Image (cartoon, one colour):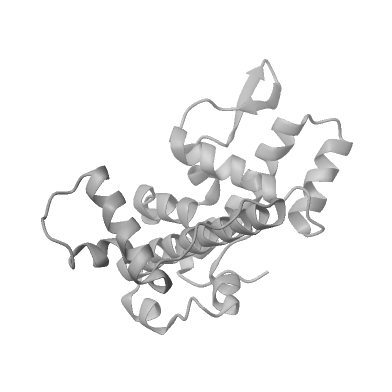
Length: 212
């Protein structure tokens, strides 16, 4: 930037490597303090640069997610969106069902007309995470989850539970109980997704924030 500003002091308007080099060299000779030297590439400095870059990325992602959440709130309840201060973590904890981030919440908002579903079982079937029932004579049993339903929503609902299964909360405990009964990781993860969907259904049906 300093070199670009200095270029205005020299004749000509061509933008070539040769002219840029001449501008930098003459400016360095005449006004050396106006240009910054190229920093060294020490290991500690490179690590600091990488850390700074990662922080900038995290901040950008947080801003993007907050904007998405605001868009969802604005569409569903403008008065609530106006009252919410997303810089206060307590609001996010109040509004968010465990494991549900802005991406999954937005997909639920645009994909689900909650008035169409009389209960959470019908919603689970629509989302593709309800167990498929197999009957044989007088025997009825549930087997693996149905392959039907909204594939994108199903994927988001199941894989967003990965953040819950390692927790000490109710969903983490439920996951470990499922594994103790002999379920594999995949089936136990889907079972957690179905259990959490009860809370999602209640929040969407009653239009109230989530509370444990």
